[in-house]
Image (tube, rainbow, N blue to C red; front, side):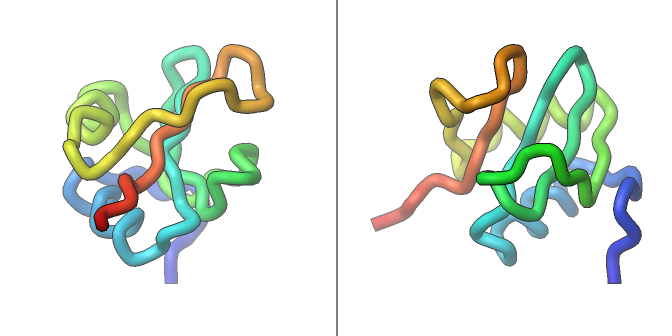
Length: 82
């Protein structure tokens, strides 16, 4: 069981996102976290440092979500593979 606020690396974070399709990678003011539900980006389950987060957001399996409700916040989710 994950303890909210646990620091992690890019490899574990992408694994978590793959296993939890509602999850997403969030960034605001150089703070990076994984949210268990991309529709509710205030919840933080995993934290990443800047270097690990930059590696993660470049993963081809993730895609950026444009125009989310929180100004200044960015979100990436698992790309839908068809």
